[in-house]
Amino acid sequence: HRPDEDAIFAFAEGYDIKIYLAFVESLKATGFAGDIVLSVSSLSKLKPGVEDYLRAQPNLVVYTVDWKCYTGSGKLASGPKEGMRMCQFSGMYGTPDVDSPDAKPTAAEDPREARPVATARYELYWAWSLAYHSHSWIMLIDSRDTVFQTDPFKDLPRESNDQAADGTLYFFEENAEATTIGQSSYNSRWLKTAYGVDNVSSFFDKPVVCSGSTMGEKVAVEAYLRAMVAQFDETHCKVKGCDQGFHNYLHYSHSLEGVKGIRSIELHEQGKGIINNLGLLRDKPLRERGVLKEGSNEILNWDGRISPVAHQFDRDDELKTIV
Image 1 (cartoon, rainbow, N blue to C red):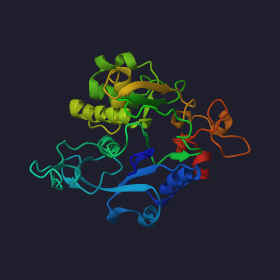
Image 2 (cartoon, rainbow, N blue to C red):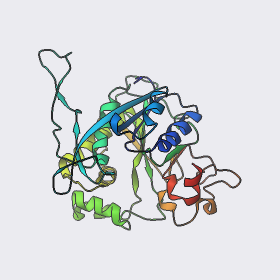
Image 3 (cartoon, rainbow, N blue to C red):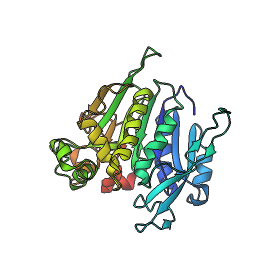
């Protein structure tokens, strides 16, 4: 890690090399010079060519993660099964030696009950965030369905006071015309399962805020990640996708307001920010919508400018054959 650089964090386990190529090479092509930090499978489980490719990349920090996963009946199983199994970390946690604070901690069992890896990834992100300076910018993004078109950090506001104790957080909506939280059986179920219908029904007319695309200054991102980890501890929601429920609850319940480290939260409408979430536009080809530019393969925001980051591109039949 280079503490004074910006960074992009992604959970990238179990993929063929083409996923890593699309993610990393499109990002490099933008001129981004910060850190790329990825979590991948243990070396023995990487797909052909992946290890050699990742080792050859500059400014790429890779963590191999071993999981202890369980079947629905509670028996040990091999791997997360695309997030469907409940898992615990192996080797993530340790106990420090109070008499020798500089010594390597003694390995400890995962203190949390088994949960989906999509939920557990926020613990990885939190640990990684500690390596960066307070006002470096960090992006949390899904790796499987993301492509970069311009440097997403190029025109960000920069804190002039290095001692400032808080920072900005960016959230990004899904398309509000396509659905609301209440109209989405998935999003409403995640919230109801985690918090109970009485605590979340007031959010049902709101747009979905995507948990797979977040940015902010490190000081704010770290506070947000602490809150995301705490949501599992408080709700014990084990449904795959509950992390999106946690994310939307934190925003719409205003639970992040006044939290130490977070000065402000900017919510960006779909197609009007740095990250363009395309998933809910699948009912019509992006080319017909004008999102995929005529005469080229550029993905656009609604104002016609290039989307720095295109997320969920694989929901469009034409676009997924191009990337």
